[in-house]
Image 1 (cartoon, rainbow, N blue to C red):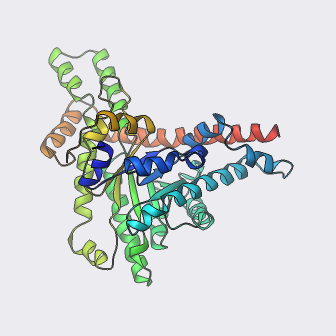
Image 2 (spheres, helix red, strand yellow):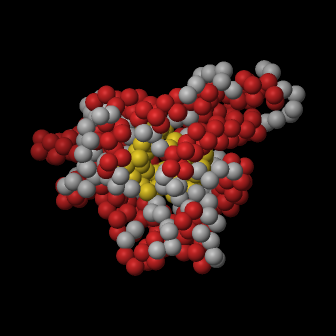
Image 3 (cartoon, rainbow, N blue to C red):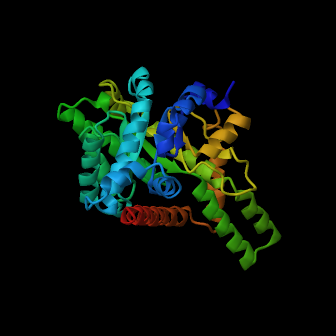
Length: 373
């Protein structure tokens, strides 16, 4: 059996971390759904930038825009909205058959708004209205200013994919904000059963940065025993961090407070594993899929990881295995002089910067093409 399809047996959904026009026009997305059991899709400025720069798939929109005085930002939004609507329409049978449990496509608010609560709220509401599909999610960064925006959007019945989560502490804040948002929605007479959300917890970037910190310490001079301890942490921290975040998920989405909402039809906010392609050649290419399989989770994989897992992935309920080992890994990291808080703070800051840079490149690419019309 296709290992990708087997993920569903353990309560995990496969999403693809990619979107380009050809996915819609050439049947690629439909094929993923039919053959691999795909249930959703994420997009971001980096993905759109590659799609616009690397293909002629959007020429019709550039032709239409000729002489209309549109800005690069206007045209980008037009093409992004069209692609996400198209993806949502192809995913709609999944959404309908699963009664809203899955079948979502995501579109991001501008990365320039990552530290702007009011701006995030306004843009998220506008995109939600423009997309006009029940099976879309608006991506909002899980920054400090993003938390109140997310809670408010949830209270208004808007589906949100909270992105750029790295730390267990910030994840808990987001999960609790979701519960609070649903409580406000219920108090105002809204239907909590219509709301869906995921919390996108990033994986591979953690190991990549921890490995750099390990390398720095070894180069600075350590004993043979310390070097052995440090090197034993390589490739293990991201999975340990994710396992402990999932334990937090189980704590938040249980107990009397959550049960009161569940009784009204509320859905849990699933944890979504993002950045799940391995960055180090020393690690197995499907490591971040095989080790994070569990109930009420999503793994959004780039196409190369989907192909690799289809070919040689092994499926088992791995996510709750050896939690004491995960705790020991995180303790060892701290005692070795590497602060997880410093790592996750740096990754969150870098994540915003990288998305802003991709967004600027995207707008530049669109603007250049537009100028040539």
